[in-house]
Structures are given as C-alpha cells and as structure tokens.
Length: 177
Image (cartoon, rainbow, N blue to C red):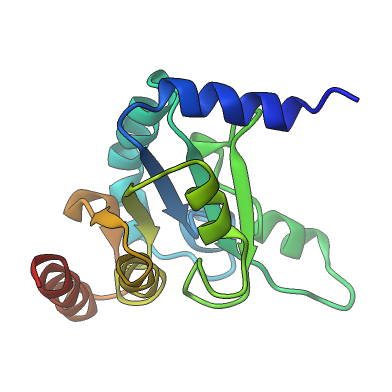
C-alpha cells in the first residue's frame, strides 16, 4: 500500500539540504485568539513574525512542526475544542506535523526526537508561546539532544516582560555555552 506520509518525508529530505526544521509551540486559540479561554495579548504581537518564518520554511519545503499542549478532558465542550485548535493565521498545511504534548517540553514523551533524527535534521528554529515555559524547555532539551537551536526574539513571547527577558537570557546563555 502506498504511504503518502512516507513519500512526503522523502520529498522533505531531498529538498531540505540545510537539515533545518521549525517547531511552532502552543500557538493555539486558547492562548492566541481573543476568544480563547486564556488569551495572552502578547501572542498577537508575534503572529506576523511567525507567519514570515513559517512561510520561509514552507517555500523551501522544510519541515514545519506544530507542538501543542493538549488537555485530555472527560467531556470536552465546543469551547474546549476551539481552544485546542491552532490559530487560523498559522493553520497547518497538508503534510505538516502536529505533535500533542502534555508538558511544556515538546520532546518529553513524544516522538519528536525520533522524527527529527530520522529526517536527519540538525538545526531547529523554535518559536511560539511562551518563552519562559514551552520555548525555554524545548530549546534546552533540543540542545541536550545535540541540535543547533535558533530562537528568534521577535517570534516568542511571555505573559510578562520580566519572564520573557529572563527566559531569553537563559536561552542565550545555553546557546553560547
């Protein structure tokens, strides 16, 4: 039987000469839509920059990976379903990967590292919400796995400027160590 996903992976590898992928963290309606249950206004500021980064990767047929905190609810409501969807301006395209995570670190108890190693990815761009939780934890874990990491400051945000500045400082220290 023909496996479209396996074929897509081969295409990505052939054209992904830079061995680079982008991981978009927690850009879901819950945090990034004005009607989300925990809307953070700072997420709106980074959306245009995220769109530019995602477009760059898509144009070059490089892997685009969404990783979102997913809550298992006994009886999800329509609002819960809305909250867990990726925001419309960044809607995943066919063939793009969605990884559900239950912790801030996108590598923790997910198949992310295996996928990246199988695709021979060495360089990661990590973007999204929030710099002091998911971005920080995922970036540090990526470094532990041996990936080269870029975290564009304009593509991440936090609930407050102190947490954001502290997280960027820690990430910067790790990246230069």
